[in-house]
Amino acid sequence: MTIKPPVEDFATDFDHTDPKWVKDPYPIWDDLRERCPIAHTERYGGAWLPVRHEDVAAIAHDTEHFTSRTVVMGNGRPGEEAPPAPIGVAPPISSDPPFHAMARRLFQPVFAPKQIDDLEPFVRNLCRGMLDGLAGQELVDGSVDYAEHIPVAVIAKMVGIPPEDGEIFRGFVHEILEAVDLPIEERIERFAPIEEYIIARVEEHQANPQDDLTTFLLNAEIAGQPLSPEHIFGSMVLLIVAGIDTTWSAIGSSMWHLAQHPEEVARLKAEPELLPTAIEEFLRAYAPVNMARLVKEDFDFQGCPMKKDDWILLSFPAANRDPEVFKDADKVIIDREVNRHAAFGLGIHRCLGSNLARMEIRVALEEWLDRYDSFSLADPDAVTFSQGQVRGPRQLPLKVS
Image (tube, rainbow, N blue to C red; front, side, top):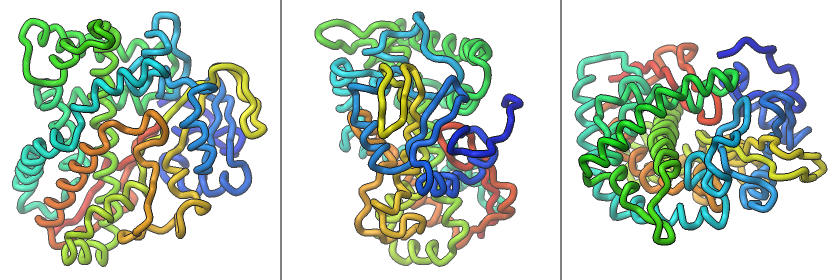
């Protein structure tokens, strides 16, 4: 974390790593929605923040004026050494049309419902094993002891990487998604071990092919041509980082909410069929992911003079709390019937792994609720949240019984 001045006015100087934002961003977005629905900052080389659903949706669908060649907002921009814009740094999420459609189509069978169903027994056994290991404890960290391990193990299994490397994966998440306020030179230096690790795993799979996603990428073709090394590397980064932090954060936020609402815990235990609906509401209310775009060329959007290479921070969580779209948007209603939320994004980059994420969240909560009769925050002030574009509890001390 760098030393920088605190934000005084988020409308003209927003920062998604500011302590106020990290602790509780919802009042910030509500205030901006009323007085400045597209905020601006000179930090990170210049950036814009839309918080109304209509503006977030318009930009997310606009591939003419905005590029996705990099989706993590930080100091600096992709240089000449980065993969070209059509591919981007982490395809397909960083790919622009028309290449995007081909890169995305490559992954669609991998995340099809049948493939995800086949993984469910593994996830359920994983959750039960972790809960068995916590038996007898009255104090449990819902994030450190439980939530963070679930997507790590799942992604490790899918890409064919040793599960004991989980701590390494969590380090990747921190360096790529949380340490965004560091100088670009330091960011590049700290990325080097990540690059070395992934290249080594790819080389191992080249020498010893396996039935996993890494070997799948090595054998894949687009338009009759094998994937470039940059494409394989970028997709591996995407699978490891995006597949872990988003789901970890969603599971943790759901547990954080329920720990403060024993009446909802009792209802879900009495009406387990309600859980999928409740999960959709947790995803809406506590959507973990903000996504970045870059402005392609100077462009006026809704009266905002956007310049080439300005960042756009697409706040899907803020869009999900827009009262123009959702009734009682600031309330968590676990039996909400109409809920077309944007937690998994909007437009061509809507999350390919949504089926996997939903399954992991559901199984994690089912097993947790089955194991504990009640749970509550051991110390609300001890709960900490991640900074940057993905938000979720990092420490979540719970009293369980």
